[in-house]
Amino acid sequence: MSRALIVVDVQKDFCEGGSVPVKGGADRAAAIAELVRGSAGGEYARIVATRDHHYDPGDHFSDRPDYENSFPVHCVAGSEGSDFHPGFAATAASDA
Image 1: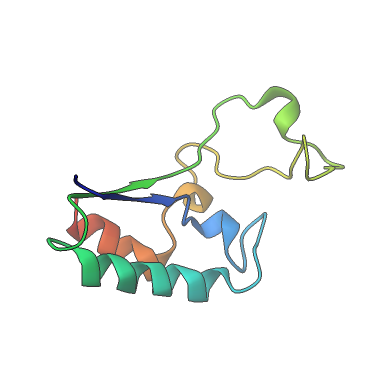
Image 2: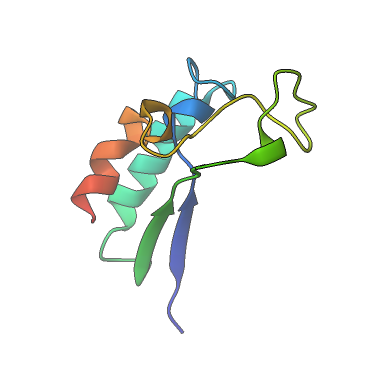
């Protein structure tokens, strides 16, 4: 049986300085990049990375988010915030 690694939403908007930051996000991005580099061609048959992105989020974006059903503007398709975090981006690009 083959194994896959799915890396979810390691984006600028979810790291320090982004619109919905997670404390330690930049450090996590670097750690995930290290895991991917160390695993490429070995432990996992496939490694894929996803990116959150929004075109017209309707009620998802709010000026007064509840962080359960609504959030600040984030990961708008084509925006810098929707890009992979730089600590992870080079790894994602090299494995594309």
